[in-house]
Image 1 (tube, helix red, strand yellow):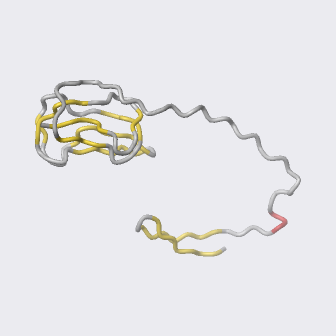
Image 2 (cartoon, rainbow, N blue to C red):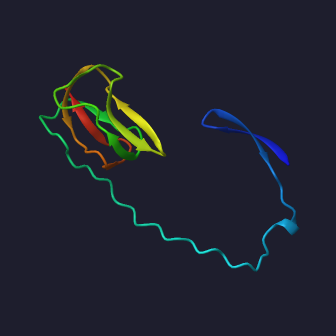
Image 3 (cartoon, one colour):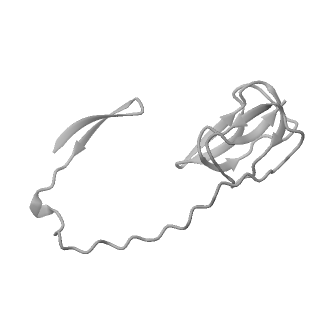
Length: 125
């Protein structure tokens, strides 16, 4: 066994790895296991859910993912840090928050939509 210290995105992890001897590894002549085919990737969808007059303040996705929940509605007042849209990425729920105080002018996505990082999800006035 060997121990390593690994740093990932500023987080430090102590990892212990078990080494296998040549007799413990699979024979070189073994046939590779069948790899299941993955379905073709769907392009990101930017379908409008609730659309009003577009606002001047854009609320953009910080990461690619799928729209999980929209806890706000058009016309709702929000404060800086309030969740406008919640994205699911890597099995985590990531809130996309209002960058400043305002009123939701438009919500440009629907629950279930795939979005790319930097996509405009909503606008505020």
